[in-house]
Amino acid sequence: MTLFFGRSEQRMLGDTFGSFGTGGVKFGGSMKAALRVAPVYSATGLLADSISVMPVQGYTDAGGIKRRLDEKPALLANPHPDPMFTIVEWLHQFVISYCLRGNAYGIITAVDNRGYATKIGWLHPDSVQVDETSGLPQYSYNGKPLDRATVVHIPGYTLPGSSVGVSPIELFRSQLETADAATRFGRKWFQNGSTPSGHLKYSESKLDDTQTSRAKARFKASVVDNDIFVSGNDWSWQALSVKPNEAQFLETIKATANTIASIYHVPPEEIGGEAANGLTYSTLELNQIKFQIRAQLPIYTRLENHLNRLLPPAEYTKLNADATIRTDLKTRMEARGIALRNGIETLDEARAGEDRAPLTPDEITAWQKNFGTRPDPAAPDEMDKAKRIAEIIQKIYLGVGTVITEDEAREIIRMTGMDLPANVTVKQPQIGGQPSA
Image 1 (cartoon, rainbow, N blue to C red):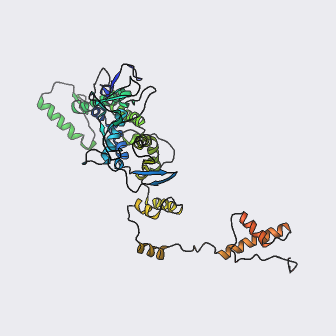
Image 2 (image 1 turned 180 degrees about the vertical axis):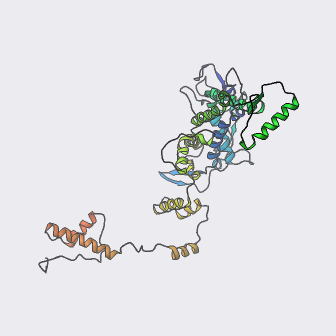
Image 3 (image 1 turned 90 degrees about the horizontal axis):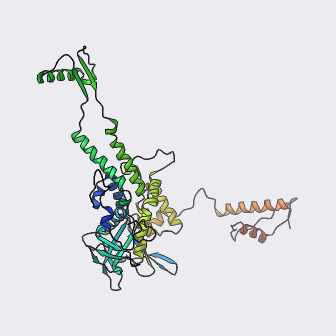
């Protein structure tokens, strides 16, 4: 059947992987088989590791006023059904299933007294069957029907007419088969295909084992430390090199790593490939932001949307991807200061972001006493500012040749977005040595 899934098809996800190709080296049919290709393991591991450590927080949106929940819902605190594990392992399993199979299938295993989900267990995608012949998808696990109300299905790349995500392993099986074949060839080449460095030949007669060993020893002794080898007409030396087509498997592995990097939108140099030689300016922080937008954002946004539909109304969740972007200490402190000055964060929130407890009243008093806001020596005081404003007014008067009143002067100042202190009067300019009227 085609990727659009026919009318009578009951798709078995285990069959979508199958074996890579029909000839040459065969791959196994499990997810572990794909992970044997080092770039696949590196790419999916990079995504799973980076997303699984993102802080998860709950929020509420009441009448357009958004605020962080003081206490996380149980589903966000630890959705893993097994109390031995945490949300980190839970997120990791989701990403691995999503990346390798293009789908993550979960089952709600526990609810609270209001009926909202508190635990979700991820199912092995190879054991899930999806029947799309009757309109809404019907799910089975190892052949046993599942209640749709308890199923959490997060697909990735989906085609029109289907609710099942396309498996990257299925789509790009030829590239993965090539990578596996190159790896196997390299292993055999190093294990069984050793090549001598050269051939020392005696042309006059045959040599027995003793003569061969003696000639070899003398030759090696004469060329030690890259010394010069001298012989007559009866001896010859030919260096042997690896055939280019035999050594090309290393380049094949690098090329495959670049292809896999493009599939998962990860930096190729992180998974054994080679980065493009671009001239664009780049920093570690910019690279992290690019990785977040291209590779991580589509994955965790899908997860957020599916979790939101399981939370009470007006509540939603967000994964804090910015928390994984590490900057230098100076930049981070400057960003905190900007957030505080603009009201984006409170002092307690800023300190919590640095894993510090809120200040006590005594600590706040001491901080205000020693480090509170002080006048900037470089900044002019109010009187200096008023004098400069008065000079501007005088220039306006002299320029237009018309005397303006103090109220008119204040109005002009207010129109510029400033104001004069109430205790400051505008000195009227003198004309011909006499005060103007």
